[in-house]
Image 1 (tube, one colour):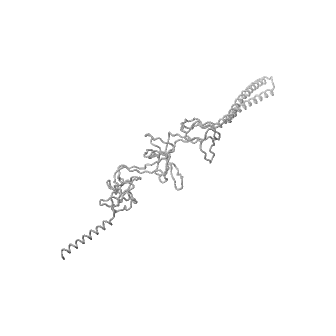
Image 2 (cartoon, rainbow, N blue to C red):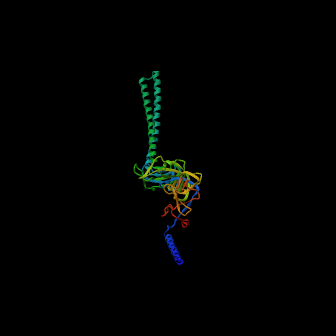
Image 3 (cartoon, one colour):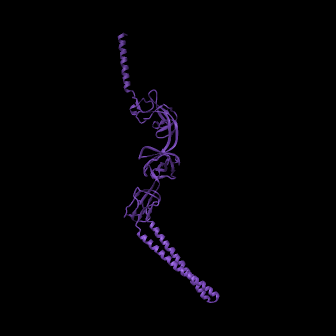
Length: 385
């Protein structure tokens, strides 16, 4: 074979190899851009949170209404006023009851004067009976005369006792009219803030009859003592007990959380909606720190801390796959699946007991197409920025 022919064959072979390489290069699987997280050591907490928004509540709150209907005559406070215990809040028109009370007091005075009259006569009759008894013993009067004097004295004494009973009766009538007047007056049962008033002077205030919800006349709250009530899923309720540490956050105070403790766990399950059974818990803020300014009714979230591990190997929870698996960035530029054993976990980090070490890099962008074991990868630097 001539040298020229050999050169031509080699050249053709080279061209075929180049074409094959070009086709392979064009059809090769492109590396997938992924986000990686480096395994480190740190704190991991196990916690649970409320299923629906909680609410800031006052330790003492009462919705007051008069026990009888009537026209509002006096409104002694305005919404937002601070009041002291026993302070007058509202009074209904009760002139008729005051008149009845005045009449009853007059009757008391009349009855007392009748007591003086009846008892004075009874005392004289008693003295007369004693005198007749003395004369009878001396033989100056007959026995019938003595008996008549004694009977008269007893009758007069009965009249005295009846007059005293009349005084007690009329005094009871006075007390009854005073009780009726109290039904038309509202006093503050504790020191607090008037949150809301329903009604104006001159309007008719109606108490709430049984089974018919009626807005209260005055809503009084004690905002010096507050707590957070939050509904927790019934499945999580057995894990919660009084005294556990919580973190409380408020929609009105974004990007802040405040330490607190569980105060109470409700002893029953609430079924507010179908298939939504919850257990209410009450949490209070720690008193050793300056509490934020809160308003009753603020929405709040409560996160109950169940357990804490410090300085443990941890992985972002977003890197975990079903069955306790992660994708590790291999040194050969491909993704490798690795089985791990986990411990405590929350929505951010999960404790690693076996399978990973500090410094390993795991994939956190599992939702991207083509992310699977054996796939070639490149680090998504744009996403980092």
